Every structure is written in C-alpha cells, then in structure tokens.
Length: 370
Ligand code: IPM
Ligand code: MG
Image 1 (cartoon, rainbow, N blue to C red):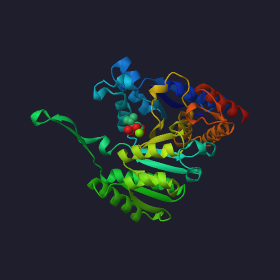
Image 2 (image 1 turned 120 degrees about the horizontal axis):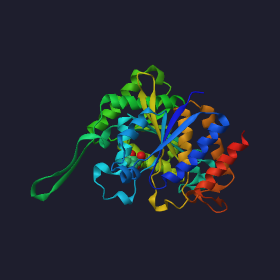
Image 3 (image 1 turned 135 degrees about the horizontal axis):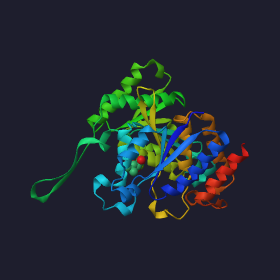
Image 4 (image 1 turned 135 degrees about the vertical axis):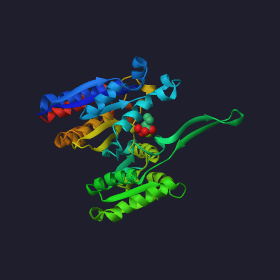
C-alpha cells in the first residue's frame, strides 16, 4: 500500500495528552490493517513559540502542506497572554488555515445516544441530534483588511477589523454544504446578518443564486436564517437543522453552541478542507472542536475522543479508508455503551477513566474486531 504522511501537531495544554491516544490508534491501524500511515510530529502554537520564537515555523508549514493530512490537537493558554499579537499561539492555526487554503470547515454536532443525559438540554430536544455546520474558514472578519489598532486624536485608539466576502468565496463554501446535504438529509440552512451587513446580504444572495442555478440541488430544501435567530433556534429546537452553512465568525460561535448541545465539547471532531489543486490533491487538517483546556492540562483527565474522532474523519476524507473510519466510530460508541467516561462527560453510575484509559479501552475494542 502506498505510504501516506500524517503530520501530528500536538500543540499546547491537553494537546500532547490527547495526541498520545491518537498515536496508539494510528499504530493499531498500521499493525492490524496495514495502512502504512507514516507519522511525524512537530511543534505548534505556544510550544513552538517557546522553542523557536514563532508559533509556526515555515518548515512546519511546508511539511503541513506536503502531508496527506494534518492532525492538530489544540493551541494557546494563559502562559502566552502577554506575547505580542502576531506571535500568539492562535496565529499558528490561522496561518495554517490561510496558507493551506482550508476554506471549508466541517463541524458535526452529533449527540451520542449514551450521552443524552450529559447535555444541559432536555433529552427529547437532543436525542438523535445530527447536524453539520459548514463554516467558511479563510475569509470574513478573521482575515479582512484593513485591520489593526491605530492611535487617533486625543490619545484615543481605534481597533479595526473588516468583514469582507467575495461572491466566489461564498459560492465555494455553499457548494460544499449543498454537496454534503445531498449525502445527508437534503436540508441546508444558511445563516447571515443580511438585515445589518452588506456582506451578509451578498452572502444570502449568492447562496440562493448558486442553488437556483444548479439543477443537481433541486432535491435540497434551502432556507436562510438570521444568525442571531439561528443561535436561538439551536437551543430551542436543534433537530430542525441538517446542514448549516455560515461565515467564519458566526461559524465559530454557532459551532461552539451546537457542540455543547451534545453534552461535551470533548466529543466533537472537525475537518478543514481545501479545494482540489491542479493534481487533484486536497489539503486537509483535522482538529477537535475544543481548545487546549489549560486548566486541566497535565492531569491525565482530558477526553481524547474528539481527537480520535478527528482521526476517523481524516481516514474518511483524506486517506480513503472509509471502512476503517466507520470501525473507529463504532468502537467509540461501544466504549461509551460500556459506561466508560472521562471527567467531562461523567455521570452517576458510570465508570470514570483517565485520558489514557479511554484510549486503551478504544484499542481493546478494536482488538475485539480483528
Ligand atoms: C476554533 C477556535 C479558533 C477560531 C481560535 C483558537 C483561533 O475558536 O477553531 O473555533 O476562532 O477559529
Ligand atoms: Mg471556536
């Protein structure tokens, strides 16, 4: 089998702990399914800043561009609060997204049946929940120019960011959402603030135009919702949604909200994908939806499941191992069914386990499948 390169960027906080569990899983697939996945590891975020004075070296960026998939755990933490803005750990993430042109960020919010009662919402509201947020990831206010902090008259200062989208950027991400909806429940909700922002109005118009112009999307039901209303609807009745497509900033917020509906941020993976280049290659990066959780770092209690499921997404979207991806998703469910829980999803009557015990339990389930 041809070798495939996976770059592991563990980053900061709980990153190294959860990445260690993914490494066990990758090893298992290499040994037992002969996948020939070659891993290499590099520093990113605060860890890279401490070592190299920059949160992302060019060398690591090039390596990321060259790999079949990047797995990134998490970056950031209070240790780097006073670091100059351009050197903050988060800049690594944003530069990777921008330079790898990862414009489409897929963030599923799936409620595992076993965890229904871990959510703060009533079970009937979230049981069976399966929505997918498609977040635009390389445009909008995160990257728009002009930006900065300026000194103005009377010693006052002005902070500037620019929310900007071209029709091409909007259509490109809307197409991803429609194509995914075709494989799911044929429903797309596009979120914008077209009542306030011109860029929001353009967003709405372009999504609608793409839909109207494309015969292949006729079976899909498209609706538009104001982003604030959508935030409210997500807690009122989240099961009305299938695929949600939205811009970078709204996607950031709505995906945290959607993730928490399911009980824990510690469970949800994400995929960030580029367009095909001229050789038909897609660049990709896979990350858990949660952050570096510095408050629990080093304690061995973090939930490695979002990271492990991010690898499952990589198996499917970048490495062409659909069956293996399904297998990994299945064993995660089985482990939950057995009552094993990390602290973030712990409930009465269940068995609390550490980060590595959760990883080992997943490996044990995989072993049962040989
Ligand atoms: C996310 C994170 C990042 C973002 C931060 C860490 C820069 O919140 O991936 O959702 O805002 O995009
Ligand atoms: Mg976020």
